[in-house]
Length: 464
Image 1 (cartoon, rainbow, N blue to C red):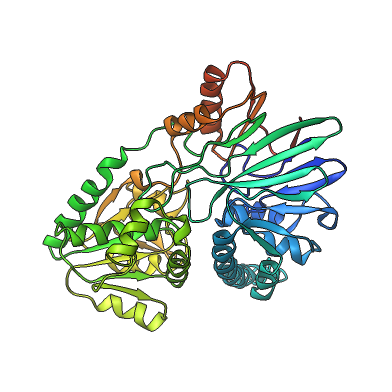
Image 2: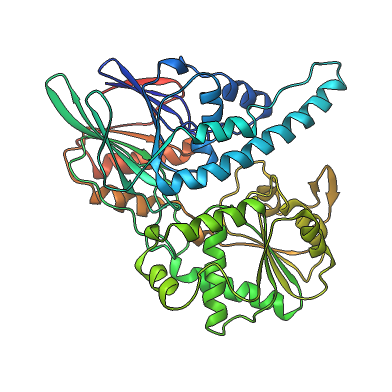
């Protein structure tokens, strides 16, 4: 067996891994690469393998850096099954449709820029119809249900605790006269999540492929997250300011809404008007309501005995642009949660443009912001910042809470590895910036001295 590492190697974007075994080809993940525009366009349009010769595709979860290039894969000729959990299928359906709209808008913008240089226009990577066709190829599976996907290869999904429906991919393989178990961690959650169950330990692992998004650093203690949220928000609301929260549509938005719901019920925050202003976030929240089987015991009990975790009287979900624009007229205290979490796209940029110049307001980040994004610039205290190509003075308070992160930090990743059983022979560290991967690889060498630990390069091929 061999694996081609074709994405998210020494970086966090464009997850894609091609497994060759028993003269068959299985693709794990097919994410969009997001980086410098020209490089991104080239890598996303062209696959480094013949898509028509794939025997199966397996998907760990619905984030765009893991599933976002599936419509392009199918458009170019892949007609087989795409295996994932039921919740991942439902989330990917809305994520891919939204991604198609972004592809269209991006192509229009780039084509205008190229026209100024007398260059031909560019086409979107894929359209909404391509996204819908790809979703038809999804095959949903429950956790812990083994499924043969190719000759000698059976997959089982185990809960990863990262976002709704996120899974670790367990591959039980028979090759020639040997049998072994290959575990792809997917993205691993922190555990003790407000909504989701903890990552589930896997037994009898022979080979491990593990993410390292935060493999070289620690998060703030989770126990402090709600207290910090209450403190920051209370101060702003008391001054009749607005709280602007850039948040990822899947996972983080629902987590923050649930935290506000609990604080409001407990009387620790006033029931000020709160808005979730993102069509994708609204749709994702609807999907969460459809999958209580993914909830932990506390959230499930809250749902059954108290109320919808993601709904309260002072909360309004907004889809229409006209309703979104009316938020500009708000004069009193309010909370606005909008996508994207890195402030790179979506309606959050409008809210930042209209509110970042007022010292009464708070801009609160609750997730990771990649280098060079607008969110990273704001967090680094750059002043002014460019929004829609124009400079804006930053006078609002800026804060961040990393304890809401959906990714395990280095100690939580180590605890995850320690709970795995089996004689692990090789470990590949992926899905992290180079410094994070290298740091976690060193830690793994200390706790798993008998295993070969490597940090693969882009397009490297590893035999197992």
